[in-house]
Image: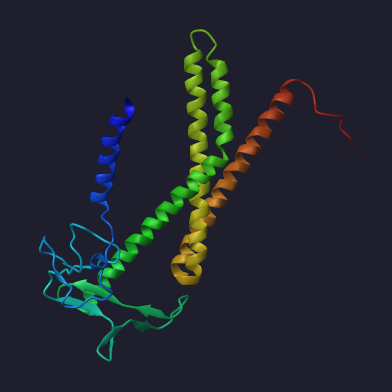
Length: 253
C-alpha cells in the first residue's frame, strides 16, 4: 500500500532537482572570454555580466565599477614615467632608509600632511607606551597572584570565626590585594620607565638621560625604604630581646 504513495514523492523530488540544477548544454556554458558581444548590463543596472544573474554558472564574470567622490586629492610620492612611486627617505640616527608615500583627500600642502601624519604617529606611540605599561603591571600582578590566593584561603578560614569572621575575611583580602597591587604597579612602572629611558638614551640622549635619572632615583628610594624597614625590624627585635633580660648568645672579649 505504501509503494503507490512513495512514487509521486520520488517523482516530485526528481522534478525539483531538475528545476534547480538543469542539465548542462553547450549553450549554457559560460563564455571563455569577455567582449562586447557577450557582456551586457545586469537587471539591477549597476553591474556588467556575461551570464544572467538569475541563473549563475561556473565561469560567469560580473564587473562593477565605483566612482570616488572627492574632486581633488593630495599625494606625496615621486612621479616617474607617468607613474607614482614611493619617495626614498634618507637614513637618520637610529633609523635606516626606507620608502614612503601618502595619499589623502582634498587639497592639502605637504607640510600639513606631514604634520598630520606626525601627530597620528605620536598618538599611536603614546597609546602603545601606556598599553605596554599596563601589560607589565598585569604581568607582575600575575606573578604575585599566589600571595593573593593564600590571603583568600586565610580569609576563608577566618570567616568561620563567629561575629567577626566576615569582617576579618574582607579586611585580610582587601589589605593583601591593595599591597600586591601597589607593589606590582611600582615594579612595572619602574621597569617600564627604565626600558624607555635606555632606548631614549640611544634615540634621544637628553630625554633618555633625564628619564634614566628619574628611574634610578625611584629604584634608590625603594631600596632605601626597604633598608629602613629592615633596620627598624632588627631594632625592634633587639629591643624585645634586651627587655626580656636575655641575649642571643655568650659574649666574648
